[in-house]
Image (tube, rainbow, N blue to C red; front, top):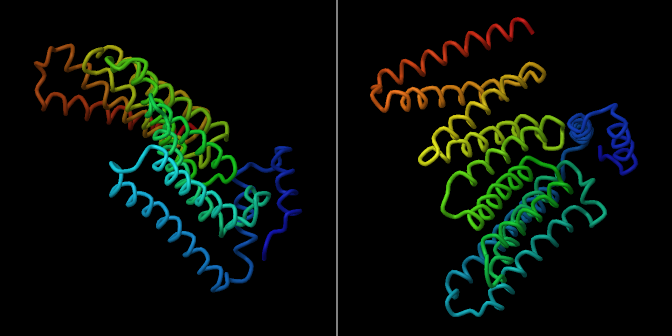
Length: 310
């Protein structure tokens, strides 16, 4: 059956009062809609047409710009990209059933709306970057991030979250590259902070799905922690060890396998690096493998003990 607007408002009220979590609210809505009649063929056709239309709009804009890029003025380039962005946003709103229905769009249409918004975030980034006369990467990445965050707030899906994560990483790289282009340390520290912030926001249910957001945040933090390795190795070791510490400590209160795996991976990465550095590279590959294996065994035993005690 179709979930009415009043029913969705009632569920939202329960979520606001803390009776339901946001994930439980979405699960209830999906379960109610899945118990109804199967979608009509017309609905399936409309869904497929929306996917194809969005892809064709993006591909057509890319083709036009790719063939005629050198011959087009900046205004013409911005016009083509802006028109593609507008078309994608309008299509998303139409599929949702109107601007007021975007936040409460039915489960079957959420994927389509989210996909169109994600494509619009990409084209808006290119539009802003093309329109800027300087600092194009910073302007484009920042615009894409703002559009992606707006889309995620309106329709929180897996694709919307991944778009936000990718846009945030691009924006951080753009800004740090502009402010500190010659050193890897600021960029690495910024990505580490971004990843840890993403993990925290997932734990407090701001970013969903929680496990995916935890995994992406941990991967981003680990990637950032390893960036200063060539010039500031002690900082890279400290950041990686800090990530492992955060994951293991948080695991005591939040029983998440993602945290445990992230802590193990960070520990397994940093210990051989420290051994290699302390021995001035004298440790052979076999010794490093032995150290990594010992670390994995130790963390496995520790994690098993933690799971049993919990």
